[in-house]
Image (cartoon, rainbow, N blue to C red; front, side, top):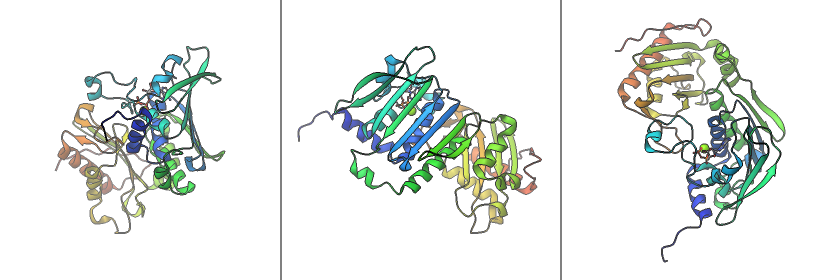
Length: 345
Ligand code: ADP
Ligand code: MG
């Protein structure tokens, strides 16, 4: 075959193949966009596990009429402009690919109204060149992204979807991760017109209420609270005592500078902290937040952004290990939040 440029829609579908695996990946991208837009309230409507519809309404800053088409284009982002910005990334997104990718494998409409614009507008793309169409709409300040019929044009992907219930469970799990990272944002999740989750916004004194809602009040009643600082590192949160740990790895939440991570090195440190106190049929159960200077950590290793690279990996590992171990040793109760001094081994 001769060399030729791919049609835009096909290039976008290939990009979608990398990050849009299932409905929960769409929800992740759209929720991150809403949070990046400063939204304080998100309503997520799911139909049929997300295969029929995923709709997210937010009260964030909105997209102006002039920028709607660009928001749907690939490599178009308002979040970084230079390599320096990339090095010091603050936002959750930055690749400028999500909306283009999702709209190439679904019927996506973006409706938005910035506070300083009289009229709301809506945009969608069609065809091989993904030309954007625009029409006036009615919408309060903020943005709605409506994704219908995910993978309707990519049968191979569609075939890999599981039951509606399983797909919805992935979405529910994703929302829990978000709920534990943004206590100040109100999150509502509906499935087939029924409210399934509602996480009201809480202030810093009520954080434990949010954790109880996500993890169960049993977890917060028995968990050991910790808050440890050492040099530029801080680790705080809750760990379950060995006999309160779950049998499945569904209660493991670790955040690095506010981003949820699944990192082998960190998992290892926590597992090691429990040592042989943990029965074979249980796994560590925790909600933990590690904070360190942004220059000490690279969160951009993986497009799905679950892995992390530390400048001082060994130090971070040992700090997490020692802090969790000391907390478990004191067997303090969750109610009397305890602060431990850190002693490097
Ligand atoms: P990225 O998030 O990597 O910038 P996306 O394709 O997810 O790329 O979004 C493209 C752009 O569309 C964003 O940079 C942002 O300017 C705009 N945008 C997307 N979703 C929203 C939203 N909910 N509210 C405001 N602006 C949004
Ligand atoms: Mg994005």
